[in-house]
Image (cartoon, rainbow over all chains, first blue to last red; front, top):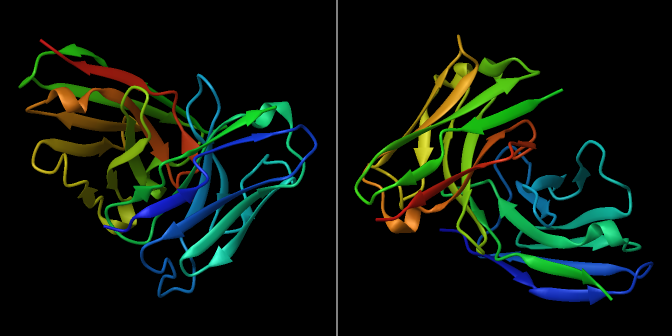
Length: 112
Length: 118
């Protein structure tokens, strides 16, 4: 199975400051079709998860542009340019290139 | 608007069975891959399985932890996705989410809670 490792597992950020979460996969997520199936999801408290970013850097519909994704191969990063109070929750990276589909452990973001 | 509504969760004894349903609306159901993902209380996300679209003959994939016990199916006439869960174990206790692809994990339902306990 592909292991997805997120760091840090928790972070506390002052509103207006940036935040960054790293995700490393145990194998390359580059598919033969040229796409890299790495996504980021956010689960706000008491809610189901929802998609933020797909294929490394594509923001899903309605996702604010303060969220951005980058990376390649096995190393990926989610950045929030200016954290807002509504960004609290648990962030997960997930790979979709190989079965079983696997998630990172999750990174809990809280507001200082 | 894409909507996914899960139902069928509840309390079941170990060794028992349960069938979850997911009603889909707002899109052409046969065109999309569908997934089930679960979340045990206080834990992270675990992929359960996938059923492909009509073009890919509705073929399925499963996590090793549920293979041979769970069956994913879909009914295009009802625009519904199903998860038949057999030989349930206490470790299957979780909220089960129905998800539509396009993009991958793009649309999530609210989830339904399954509790396996005696």
